[in-house]
Image (cartoon, rainbow, N blue to C red; front, side, top):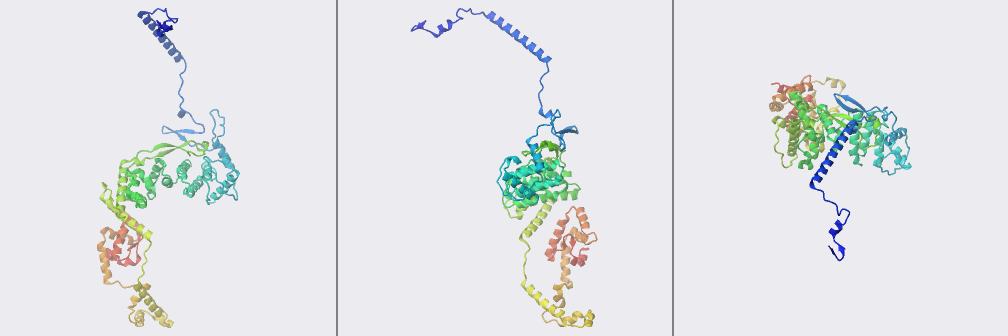
Amino acid sequence: MSYDDKPHFSELIWEGDEKNMAVPSREDFRAEEAKRAAEADKNRSLAKKSRSLTERPEQLKLWDLELPGRREEKRSGRTGAAVPRRDENVSSKEGEPRPATTECQFVERARELADYTEASAEFVKFKSYWPTYGHMTGPQTKWYFYWRNEVRQGRYPETDLSYIFLHVYELINGVGWDTPLDGYEQLSGLWEAYRGTFKRLDHYLGGWIADFSFIHELDIPLREIVVRAKGLGGDLAELELARCLTSATEQLTLPALSLMSDYDITKSKFYTGPGNQALERFVPKVVALIDAYVKRKHGTSLLEMFPPGPPVTRERYLFRSAVYDISLYGYSVLVPVVRISKSPPLRSLVTRLFRLTENKLRALMDFRGRLKGISMDKEIEELVGKFLEREFRNAQREEKGPDIVIDQDRLEQLRSDSDVVRQLLTVEEPDEELQALGSGAASEIATSIPEGSGTVAEVLAPFGEPQNTTSADGNEWESLADALSPLQREAVLALSGPEGPAALHRLAAAHAALPDLLIDEINEIAMDLLGDLLIDGEELSPEYASMLHFFKR
């Protein structure tokens, strides 16, 4: 059927070539499907048989390849990348030298210009992301070699950051120094001189100097690197912790110790307020104090008492983001790292020491509020409290300086005594009479002293004449002996003996005490009762040696 002599859509369909095509039956359709499935199975079996006759493709693993210029050594069943020697060339597997890289060309040019200098030059700005000699113009090149010579002489003129990086690239590639220690000192000098002007140096030079010390096996502390470059990974902090806790606890720093604490002290209101400098100064000292205390009491250090796990070998990629020729020292270096911060008991102790130290300093600085929930041995808490009080007061006295108070009455008395003595010394007497002056000289001189001037002993006392010890002095020394504990009296007697400080140290070790604290406690009591220090440094004041019999009871 059609409308307006136009064919309908259904009529168009059936007017094609398949108009009279017969519709297949359901049985014929199923037979055709089975035939197609059989042919597909046959094709799959043939394809499988064909693949089994040929070699299968193998996935390329880059980490299994032996990289040129890099030696591998197996130690304890572990394959590690060792640092290649300088004289090893980067070559292909066929033994043919590789084309020179940009870094290799830079090193060759740097060696050629290692001793070149300019007598004078004007500063020209220079900014380049990875600066090399080819990036500089003539005036820039002239300034660079003048500036580099000044730096080598220990003078650090103002310059641009790109000049500094160019010189650093020379040093890390082995150009411009005779010994590795000299190279390290030059790198450290550049960092110290320009880090205040260019903050980006902290981000790069810390890691590069650490890499430099690793490849040249320099035994240097990483303390400054960890303190300055706070963004460095934990490996350097772990290495510094191991070094300090093993042999140099006095060099511990708060940033390194923070790695061992569950308490983030930098977020404390006391730290962000008035206690910043005090915590930076005293927290490391407290940890060092407890390490010394544990050694004296138990005979082992903190690390020996709370041993960490075995060292973990870490692969450190050398001089990242620098113009560095890998044919010199290789891609990376293996560094054994002991995870000290992962020791749970040691971490717990350091966390509590952080909080205890902050509480004690809050009290000393009259800061409101205290941290709660600090569980600490009473003996250690008392030790830390006494130590911090002493150190904090000493720091306050150092900042204020000595208090100078002039006693006007005493000054007038000294003037009067000086006049009297001057008169006595200027009296003309025959030589025979002067030689004959003996025990009766004092009585003769006394007759010539004006009235009101006091006794001879009083007049000559300011000039070193010894005075007789009165009964009042004896009472003071008896009071001092009574105020001291038996251990403190033994300490005074030990110092007065022939061995002196050595005997004191043995006595303190036997009683699990610290010699410095013992001396400070004795001096504090002496100041209260005698108005003077009994012990000066680690020696008994000589003028009080005659009073030792008060302590022998």
